[in-house]
Image 1 (cartoon, helix red, strand yellow):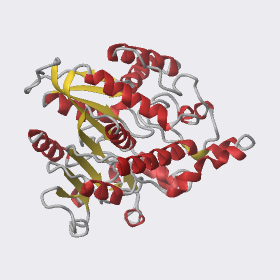
Image 2 (cartoon, rainbow, N blue to C red):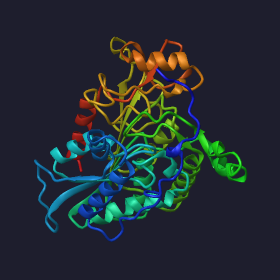
Image 3 (cartoon, rainbow, N blue to C red):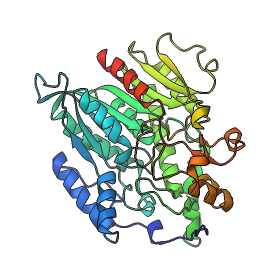
Image 4 (cartoon, rainbow, N blue to C red):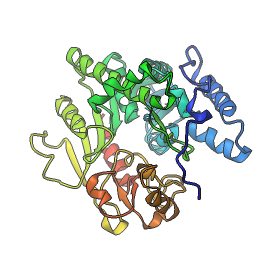
Length: 394
């Protein structure tokens, strides 16, 4: 197995295909078609079978409700939800939620954020405003078909959904999962590399990784961190000017190392709507209940030692254990925290993932032995039940 550290390769440069949003003015069906054509060009060198799989997983999509009270009074559908994936992710991550919403009477649309689905280099020049433009477009297309508009997002997608709701009175509720409401303040200075990265191109990157995954980038450019910091600052400023009084459902891990979980707690404590609900996956049930409004917090034990799960993780909320790619027996193991610093553990994690512990990449969890970052929610059925109870109160 070749585990040598990679240098910059073609994927670490812009493809020229997906660095900005270009769906404005299109119907959603035409936007999906155009994006699939773009993805086919981006992955033209892949074998046909792999290319089809990659396109299907990275493409935006739409679903129509199959059950429930879904006929609208003024529009074709009563309710609709726009799904927005997370940073370096793809719409693949939103598929199980999309099926849940479809079964519960929602018209579903899911977008692909600019810079995603093609190659990591497409994130080098993207701006958070490009992502926000895609969310605004999706909201407009959804609003054309439904009486009630809801937004749902994972991580950065959660932040973008909140941003849209703060400036769009049509949004009647939010579903956010591991929302990226606060990240390291060091990200503010991430784009200082531009002073010298023309000479040292590697300086544009936080991490240069193998990019083994077909639905998520492993390499991470500094510009992406800078754009996320700017987005979170904008949201903070927006919340001082506009108060959200709509139902908000949130789910997060208290052990999240990608974003600040306390920011989600604080955000939900400030939400005045009585139907608000936070599902918090935690290893310490007593730590987070203080001061939280009664009935708005649902704590879930995230330690399942019989399944070798030490905690939940930022990446472990929206996919079930049965997911064929990221699930308990999935084809992908997240081991990139060992790369390239400990290639022996990186190889062991990839070659024998069934023997590894799973959880968030914390100092404590790493002491247990070989550790995979948990990519699925072993309590996904319970999450769906919580979502169903929330929807019944809308």
